[in-house]
Length: 89
Image 1 (cartoon, helix red, strand yellow):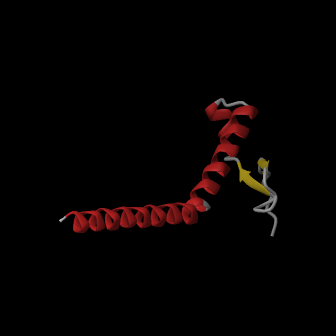
Image 2 (cartoon, rainbow, N blue to C red; image 1 turned 120 degrees about the horizontal axis):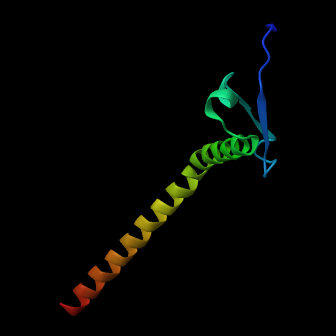
Image 3 (tube, rainbow, N blue to C red; image 1 turned 135 degrees about the horizontal axis):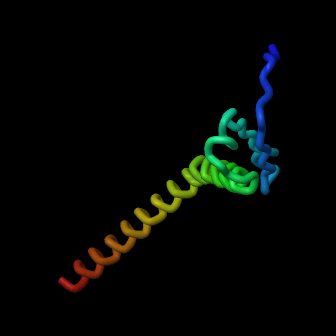
């Protein structure tokens, strides 16, 4: 259903089309008049928002892998210290 209102839309193309093609932002009706921002500022904010969303969604696997790897290294180091203490004592 289409209503009689017109919306202003900002399209942000993806730097990596494997993830998504574009992000679509719908501007508030009074965004340009009340806030006095330029088109360039709107585009920068849209790109920043899209980038923040992606960075919050994707790195979770990377952070988990890094955290698990650090625990593995810590365990191995602790095991080596215990082995050294047993041989010395």
